[in-house]
Every structure is written in structure tokens, then in C-alpha cells.
Length: 211
Image 1 (cartoon, one colour):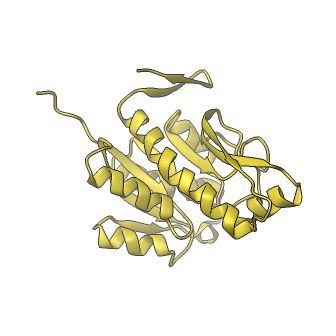
Image 2: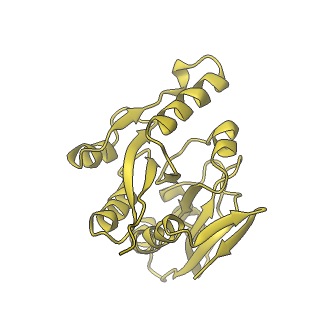
């Protein structure tokens, strides 16, 4: 019988952590060959910490203002990741830009999910409800979800997977967000599972899927 090697995942989140819960649930069911080694946030008291603590997962608050130099902040973040022998970094509603030195240390091993069809409605300032408000203001009939690898900029990394979500005539930002989030909770764990099983890689900025 082949023994699966579990990957260590570090989750970075700023708020509720609903994607964290979706991923953790799939891990606990044995569907993803991984363990969440730690949860890191730029928020001192995010709801995601409550979920992590209940699951016995270490949490870390990183306040960038505590560091006078950007490289000191990056070094501190890297130290946490290395302490937990992190293989994969998963962003789950994390609002800060990942330092370039961290991106370079984890090539093809940082993944993010965005509540729109990138490159539309991406970049700094486009997150959460702001994305859905912009979609409705633009009068679009279709939006969606994008999972992508992370590079040195906001929402510009190689796209791994996208799925469309219809915009209904009577949608509000809240109703649209609910349907988009349901898709996120379904496809994000699937992408993470593929990465942990070695079926998903980034080679020369190109996404490679293997059966």
C-alpha cells in the first residue's frame, strides 16, 4: 500500500476564513493529502483564528508596521513558513501583497482565489464586496471565480482555473457574493488537492496539469 506524503499548508487570511474552513473540511475527510500547519493574518483578531484555534492550528498575527524595513517583515514571514516546513502557501482572503522574496522562495507554491474572472476586476483595492459592486455597476451578465498562482503583483499570476457565475437581474452585491462564494468553496479545495498530489505545477510561468 502506497503511503501518501502529507504536504504542509500555510493559510494566509484577513477575515472570516470561509475558504479556510472549506479546505480544512476536505483535509479532515482525507480528501486532500495535506495538513494546515499554521494560519497567518495581518488582522490581530480575525474570525479565521477562532476556526484555527478550535482545530489546534497555530496562528500568527503579522503587523507590517512593526517592521521599519520591508525586508525585515519578509524575513519574519519566511521564518514562520520555514518553522512549519511549509510546502504550499494558500491565500484565503488575504489583503496584503506577498513580499517578492517570499514569492521567490516559493516558486509555483503560492495560490490565491479571486471572486471575479481575472484580469477583470483585479488588482489593488479589488477584494470582497468591492468586486461584486463593481461587477453590478458595469452591468455584466457573467462574473465568476479565478484561482491563480501568486507572483510579485496583485492578481497577475498565471491562471490555474476559472469558473463562470451568472449575474441575475435582481442581484445585489450580497446575493451575488453568496453564489460566487459557493463556487469558491467547491473549486479551491479541488485545486489544492491537485497541487498536493503533484498533478498541478507552474513551469516557466505556464500552468501544467497532469492526470
